[in-house]
Image (cartoon, rainbow, N blue to C red):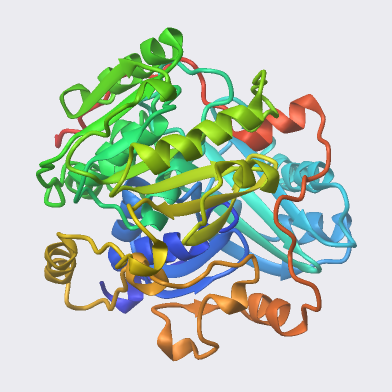
Length: 488
């Protein structure tokens, strides 16, 4: 990677997945990795930007900043944006859209900021060429992102287009499906990479199963995507993208089974469609089966991970009884497993009746949740020796062979034996030298001056139905099967 070819990039993600995304970026060769709030900044070249879009499982989109400036009102934003040489990015026959994210006491209306950026671009072309590019909400040629923190404004090119959680394999869904980025983040936080059996006994539309299979087999998450926004850029390198897209050097064998079940025949039918469309049918076993019907756990023991109903979007007649049943089945049937349960309310975890060995704060849509790890063993806890991955050393050796230039850590190794807290400063040492990445000054200031600990299970503000649909990133119903990007 030549120094002259490098430029700054930003990867957006969900809250509490920043550490996982930083590890992913370091793994593909990113430099100057620095964690922020729901984002990770880094530097790389065009090839790395393409690779981040295709390979990062916990990224929502990859942005390329093109202009940073200060502004105190929307009119100043308009004037600054209008100063740019827009011919370098757009032409009057192209279409564009502007997305905005505002975190400022000065700018209180993000949509108005987006409108002023659109006006500045349109007026620039009208005054100079007598015609202007059109705005397209559904399928623009170029997407710009304006991000404002206090008075600092950053205008970026969106290289992804549609959110990267839209993998392209989902052709059907059940009620309240799990976001693909969240599902991948849950699996990566657990430390599972395919070294044992994986089971989801309440699998719904099969998101956890599919993401687990792609991780175990080394399949890039973006391989089924129909399109990336950078393919419309004037400097798009088709040959380079084809080489990265078709590279299968990370592919590996998977010697175990991924098992999914659900009490609903409709959910299993939906999961089967999605799994078939992802090309993973031979790696995943599906069955209509209620949790109470498990009298014997699949062998060999491995990881159980599930996202049971919380009683919010999906109503359950007796939610307390469901969580008590989860605890009972874990304790008496899934001995030897590590179980991971994602839920919303503390009282629901209490109904499980087991002591969690680790806790991971996460967000599922608007809900501030936790994923708790339970190590299931027979006998007393004090006589139990913590389970270690049997193939951990082989997996670490494989990662070390991938590259010698970039220092990387295994997230499972970093977090093993530590209690997770919503307070980020408890997770790592304050010494940046002990991290494979840096933390932003904003994050440091937040830790140093925070006087109250963030409370888990707090419900976010009520949103309108339109805003809720935007936040939840609900995927469309129809996606084409995997494409093959062949060289010309």
